[in-house]
Length: 478
Image 1 (spheres, rainbow, N blue to C red):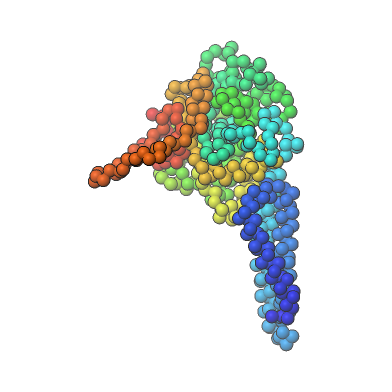
Image 2 (image 1 turned 180 degrees about the vertical axis):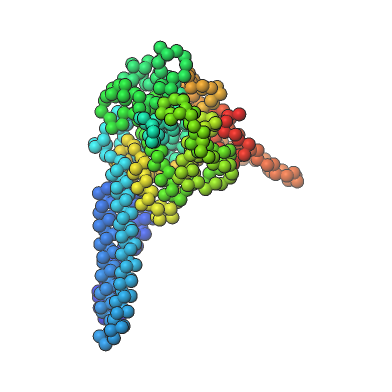
């Protein structure tokens, strides 16, 4: 329209070309996009590219206005035209700035939480082929730690200890909860800690009694203090200690850990606008038995989360839904923790990531600590996409039989349950060719109602069933 047809054709060609290239890359080069999303260097380049594109777009608007503006325009018309162009430039600058800030938030998150293998130390991290890290790992086992270092507590206690065992081919995941009061946690025979605790983590001189300072939740803090440097160079000896003990207790090779600061957990729940869970019984907010390490004395709960289906919880209440234990059993608490993770995974959708990503990234950076190397984050993201759409189950370790108390758990029996639960399932057999199949009955009988599933001790249970609304549950183990 302004007579600059060559320039117009050039700009139009570049614009359409960038759109087509972007669409092609997004649809066909997912691995490359994921690799860019976890590379600080490439994210910095992407930020620069976003700003340059935004500046070019603004130049096109301003240049077009100058070409099309009539010379004979009145002052009012020129002012109105300038204001309209300014509005268009603002409309371009705003999303450009938000996009650049989001990319930089991602870069800060990657750099703040993950370190390259060469810039970090771990006494337990495996050596893998960075090009194909799961080539020799049919199941990836990740230790999930919930660390409690709140106000009034001395040291750090890992009240929440779980293992996520992930099938690297399908993404199917089994969650295994470890009780915070387990004693005699074993160590691998080739570990220096096995020489110090040959009969597991406890003090035989105290007798066969409850020993809170030798519970599983005390290992993270107590062992590094008692035996500094025993595992060699490491950035987080407490996590390495728990990884080794969990490996020996469960019969799994724990590859990596992901530690969550529970004080920052509510921030990430708020960042995703809360989670929706089924509350089967009232869950205490606060409360202290006045026993064990880190206690502040006996204290009743300040209030309760009331029962009900599909309850939307903010960060504060979601944290207590996962943590509350006054008057409730440890297995019920562990189940609520698994359901909290399940609800969080299900609540993260593309719309939430786009609109809330800066808050999510900031909360994650404050909350997370891990020995997962930055070098393999691309394959980790690909595996995470599989997990989100795969089956997630809970492995019941049979508390009544294997650890009615925490004093002397039956770890060999637990290992047997776990190996049976994660063993590859045989493929379904199809009838031989030519063999007739049974036709469905043509009777008028009603379709049977599927029975309500209940967890069988020592079996794997789908988390959709485990986290369903069931007002008959009491949370006390009775």
